[in-house]
Figure 1: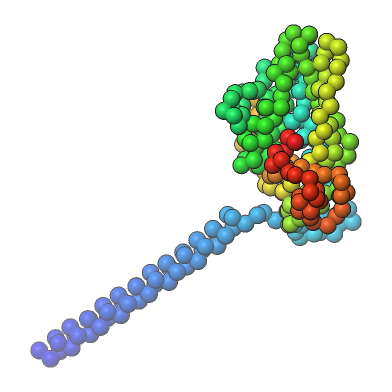
Figure 2 (figure 1 turned 90 degrees about the vertical axis):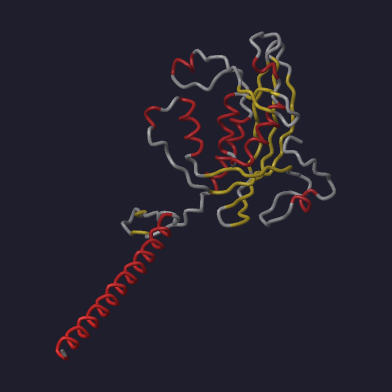
Length: 274
């Protein structure tokens, strides 16, 4: 009888130890999975490193993905605004045939700030994808208000054309990591086809630009020419997130200043179309 009790007591102790050991293994496995999950989450949200090799063969392990060359930023602002105010009345050429025989631009309807529906040129609509998403609709709405309906007229006696004539684009001024301010002095020139009469509208603005990431379409071969143009705009890895009036009274230096400091007592209309 004593022997049976000792065997029973011994078996209970082994079962308890096995349970504790198994529970400990499961607990350690859960901790390990949690740790690996946090590492994977960090890798997903981490910007990829950019590796380059210099001409002399030296290898640079990483470059700052927020930085952009000043000339790239200047060209980005100039090309974007030129596209926004390209009111030729024809569609952007997608082939050699379109370049020799351009197609009429039907325009793209946009809801204005007054809840009216007006048209912008296709070039303006494509160029607007260089703007941040929260700023794009408001900018397009004011472009629609500025765009004369005669742009889309097939009657040569009424038709107008318009373009942005840039006089100067100032060097980018860095205001934060990956953010710049770029001043532009330009004029919007509208020409009536019937008598070549011109209308000159000053367009002096400050553009606030920031670096962004871009991703190509996985099915690039199936894209339409218009979709390819939009993806080409976003592939520049830059976007304009704000536009304000630019004054020439106090000049333009390299030190960060607010709009009120640069413009002095000149009132700000709060509109980029001033």
